[in-house]
Amino acid sequence: MKPRKARLPLTAILALIALMAQVAQAMPPSPADQPDKQEAMAKLEKISAELQLTPQQKQKMLPILIEEGSKVKAIKTNDSLPPMQKMMKMRQVGSEMDAKMKPILSPPQYEKYQQIRAQERQEMIEKMRSGKQQ
Image 1: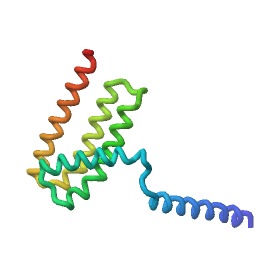
Image 2: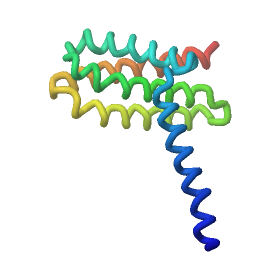
Image 3: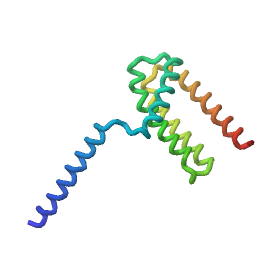
Image 4: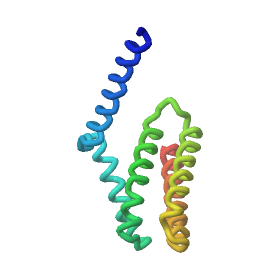
């Protein structure tokens, strides 16, 4: 009989966790999430114009861009990481994003996307260099 009593609270806890997860999904995004989404939307519009994305492609890319923005922001604001580690983590995030984008884009779009990403990386390197010189 003791095992049965122990299972009842566990079942109740699991049900409560499942309910909380459903409520959290139904809630609108918090104001803290809005800047990330706005930045991702702006980036999506820029990419969309350059790559001539379809509405379906845009829909698939938006969550990827939001995720990337959140990860990049976390890396940039992590003061415990030395600059070299930050750069390595940023590169990893970029590689992960590229892998997610490849199946969404056509081969010509992906090639142009890679050119855009290379230009962004170069601009970031130049920005880092100019920041060190000041």
